[in-house]
Length: 208
Image: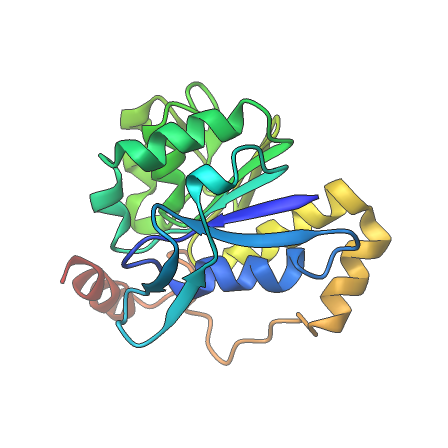
């Protein structure tokens, strides 16, 4: 199984590296990082680069497509090279997936019309503008499309996908190998539990 993870300038690292840690451990799986041009691609914080070892043209028919989010997603919404590749790859993929605001790129390509999907809480309501039914669920599977909410939800989405493609036993083994058993020190990880002042601060950070 070939998994193509999309990179673009300004991506959020955990959006793609979290799922990579899960999917890259599945038996018989090749993960390739793809971009419009091969080479190093720098994340949204400007301090980490991941190498795209292949261009879109090099990977025409992956079994799984995964698109992460990040501030750079906005500029990619009109990138014909990326959107055309997503449409073409989707015609033969077994699964087309996204994490965080990467969902908007699938929506911009017209792949989520009439489907349920999720994204980062700050942009959830905007999905409806693209003919998508927004869901507050952390992971949404609709047909052969899977989406994860903000950033860390990419690990949950990838484990869900791992179970669907390789079976629950394999997915649970991967979960144990990476020791994914979150016990955060605060209950501020969602709008439903975060204090009002924290929500306000987060909105300022995201709008800045």
